[in-house]
Amino acid sequence: MTDEPQHGGIHAIDVARAHGVEHLFTLSGAHVFPMYDGAVKADPPMPIIDVRHEPTAVFAAEAIGKLTRKPGLAVLTAGPGVTNGVSAIAQASFSGSPLVVVGGRAPNNRWGSGSLQELDQPPIVESISKSAVTAHKVDDIAPVLDEAFTLASSSHRGPTFVDVPMDEFFNATTVAPSKGTTSAPIEPDAEALGRIAGLLREAARPVLVIGTDVWADHAEAAALRFVEETGIAVISNGMGRGIIPGGHPNLVTKARSTAFNQADLVIVVGTPLDFRLGYGIFGGKDGATPARTVHIADSPGQVSSHAEMAASASGDLTKVFDGVLAALQSGAGSKPDWTPWLSTLQDEVAAATARDSELLTASADPIHPARIYGELLPRLGDDAVVIGDGGDFVSFAGKFVEPKLPGGWLDPGPYGCLGAGMGAAMAARIAKPSSQVVLLYGDGAAGMSLMDVDTLVRHNLPVVMIVGNNSAWGLEKGPMQWLYGYDVAADLAPQTRYDQVVTALGGGGEMVTDPTEIGPALDRAFASGVPYLVNVMTDVNAAYPRATTGI
Image (cartoon, rainbow, N blue to C red; front, side, top):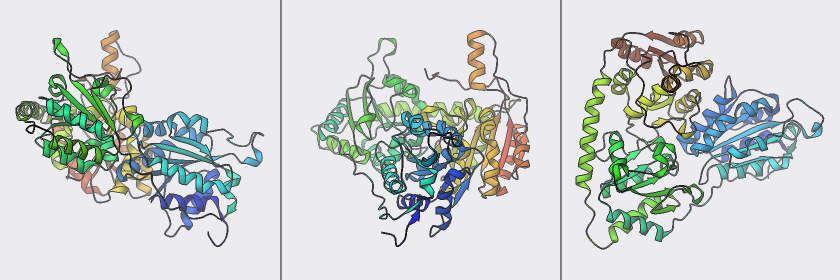
């Protein structure tokens, strides 16, 4: 027990620190002042990163969770502070990101009488979080938050929400210190792993899909070991990118269409069978036999309930990979030889790479968005963190950027929430202080969070921002024209000087209209040591060749 009573904010910070939290993201509000006081008086003090709009605070905390694999912490004041963070909490839910959001709440002693921002917030957040509760008394704050952090970091990971009445936050009590415990790993079923190994042994054209939860579950070493010992072809998505390093002979993401259409077995690990993966249906075109599908998740509740599957398994993903590998190697018969299939896909990768080179070096005027990546990729270090925040422009990033290391790619995940990139860039700069941090913006997405360059400047967080500026909501403009023959609500002001916005807020920037000037501009951005935006005017008609609408 502590020697003397401490207010609720001090207890909250003590719990957060016990669970590995190192930064607090917030926008100032009186309902949560005790949390700030607790952070300032902690030993050592916990840095407070204060932003200009609450979603950025939650997006930043979520990205800290993604990168460090420890829960991020966002603290939001009552009422609109909490409701402003709802979309970001939803993103964390869809992405399985460990996150704890602490909300202020109108005081108990005024509840029901109409005090400022009086709102029962947990019911609003409940459907997009693992738990949403109120710590009604000061004695509840530490144990309730301890449970929230444990739950957020346990499979399947996700956001938790705790709000605290203002008067109870200021009240004082004594509590036992938190030990920051986590849940035990989930043991996979050995028979299920054996069935998956049997399917692999029978397959001639298998494909492995590695998703975000492989990284989140600390299974990246086991996944790479599995791939290299079996020789299976791999496609990665989300934060699964980089687990198999870009350029690895088994990484065939560039041959994705052929791989999925011709595979006879697709094993998806650590990501949902959602619209990004054809809802779990692979092949079967032109009368061909569909591939058998296997879904592996980090917890039973994440295994698909809508797809027709040949097998499934759940549990600690390191144990899953190692268990399937052991079962495959110990089974009767010779080791499967998938060399001919892999060679076919490698030929597709080589052909796609050759096609890509034409786009990456395009000299078109207006600038083709792919040319930006042609200039960026040679300038990226192996440990760079690349963040996508946009529609059409960032789709090209998904095509061209293949990280060399895990933890090198951040995107909104399946929820598709624009405006997430600025918070993610803050988190990346904090979590990886010596790495390049590159934020790729569509011009639409830039408008949602660019004011928080002020936060980057105030907290000395240099980030390179690149805007693919086609003066439109490109992801909507083309489809609407296809559907109706016209488009509305899809155009933005031409050649908006987002770079000047950054300069006005204390950073640096420039506009580029000549493709030969993209590279030099990027060099200046990386060398600047300040938040720097390269605003590239691109061709609105150079749309990404999309294979899915997400419906």
